[in-house]
Image 1: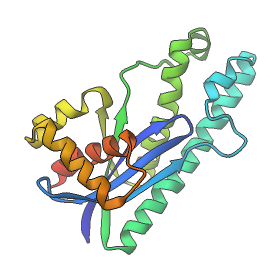
Image 2: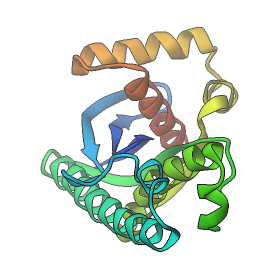
Image 3: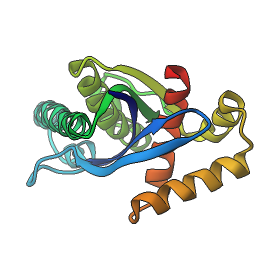
Image 4: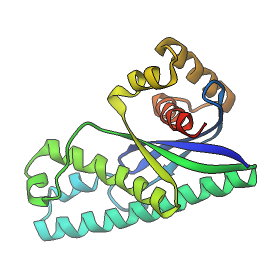
Length: 197
């Protein structure tokens, strides 16, 4: 089976997912999808929703949201893995875009700071994807979103203008939507592909 890598860019309640295969010099996209990370009826921004609750109720909402996001991430990644396998690809690695904020496990401190609420929310969904990777037995590479193009230029030895052009071509192969979410997910996967090949 042909090795493949998947890249994720998480948002509140969902993640962009792009799978690629090929070589470092000739990567090609093989799947693109949106993976829901929060069930219908559950707040897509649980930490924001928890702001209005008591600390005990907030903890219950966050705990439920973490479990929900993990379950959906496991299901979503499992679906990608099965589809790729049915097409002759073996998913080997997950690349996850990360933020630059630092989170804390102290819920009272998070609830007291709107900036920490945003950071914690991002971490909740990224960590759900990391959990799914572990459950699937896949290695995980975390890539800082802010520096992804600089890292890619250095590791892949491809100028940023050429990286941008290659990402546009990948989008043409899959069709819309092909926004910044998909481009960065593909680039993160490309970086991880470089480690495999």
